[in-house]
Each structure stands twice: as C-alpha cells, then as structure tokens.
Image 1 (cartoon, helix red, strand yellow):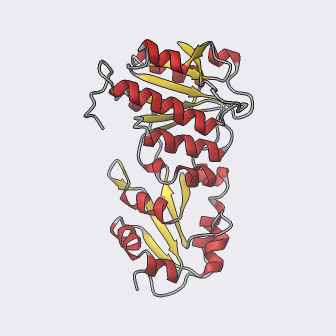
Image 2 (image 1 turned 45 degrees about the vertical axis):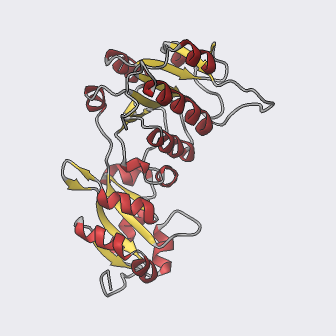
Length: 285
C-alpha cells in the first residue's frame, strides 16, 4: 500500500484543520492552502520555496492512492505526511462537487514583488480588481502557457489561494512567481522602473491590438493590466498605463470574457517578443 495503512478518522484534528483551510481567514493565519486533484498535487510535490517542500500533507482515498501511486510516492519523497481517507473524509475536505480522491495541504508560495522586479521580467500579467477566483486562476494558467515570467495580483483582487482559483490554474500556480496584495499604483510604478511598458487591456481602449502589432511596438518588456470582469478598469488605473489597448472584435460578438482577452493579449506579446527585433530570441523558452 503506497500510503499509511490505517484510515484517518473523520473526527481527527488533522481533518478538521484541513477543512478550515477552505476559509480565507484560516488560510492567512496558517499560511497554508488546499490543492485538489492529481495534477495540482503532483506539481505541489515537485515545488520548493527556499529549499522547503511546498506540499506538507496529503489525504488520499485508497483507490486514489493505488491509481496515483507515483504521486503518493512523490509526496512522501517531499516529506509530506500521507493519510489514507475514505470518500466521506475527502468530500468533507474538498471544495468540489466530485472530488478526485487527492487533497494536498501546501505552504503559501507567493513571491515578494521586489524579487519579481529584480529579475527584470519581460512579460507580466497584472490582475487589478479581478474578483472571480475562476477567472484569476485561468488568467494565471494563460500567463504560464504564454511564457510570462510573473503574475501580480493587486490588493483589490481575489485571494490567490481561493480553492477555485487554485483549481482553475491547473497546476500553473506552481510554475511561475506570483506576487499578491500589491497596490495597483505601486505595481505599475515598480514595473515601469524595471523598464517594463504597461498596457491596460480594455474593450474601450483607444489603441487597437492589431495596430500595436503592425506598428512593431510590442517587442519589448511588457506588463498587461487586466481589470474587473464586469466593469473593466477604473479610469484612475487606465491613466497609469502607457497605452490602453482593446482586442478588436472582427465578428458580431459583443465582447470577450476576461480570460479569453488575457490569452489573446499575452500571446500577442509573446509572439512579438520572439520575432526579429523583439526582446527574446526565437530560441528562448
């Protein structure tokens, strides 16, 4: 058996402690969060912060422990405590309707904003006023896929460790530095000081993304600022940007949702940066 031989009791203090992490105030107090499902747990087991393993505890059903024996082995190798649990316990801890049998407890892993600036990033996603955790996690996933070097969640945005945000990132949370709780103005000014051009994504933007690409203005270090799902970016945030850019709508759709627009913008920058004359060579990853 790849995990501890005895099932953990539903009344165990460990189960109660894990259950409480669904609530933001307990996550902040303990600096721990939940990662559910095989992909998230696999990434957590491989992740380190200052040499310390991110995954500290794992709950698994007997079936999941057998099916994902490699992940359980990775968790043990990372030093995590592994508990076998019945489906009732997993359902009690999980925040999903259909749990996949693995729930990990992880240490907070956000990166100080100053460290992100010191790394001189070339592509950054800034989530300003983003309140929906599913959207936040999906934008993080898009940033990871587009090769961004960092994500910044401002103090007006959703909690990075909300279980829905963690699930929506599909493991990307563990792939790139993420700063949290940064005031919008401080984020913009810090990135500008690091030589990064600030583009605010807004459906009512004065500049067109196609035109920006045609003009060849997007090859340098860039941070995209994405706003609230319903009302976009407030005027004071738009005013901080070097340009306010809209994604052109060539068909009859009324608009794009936040995550889709973010994917378009981030990939446009990634392509421009890898083109001849951009800030990355075509061989960079």
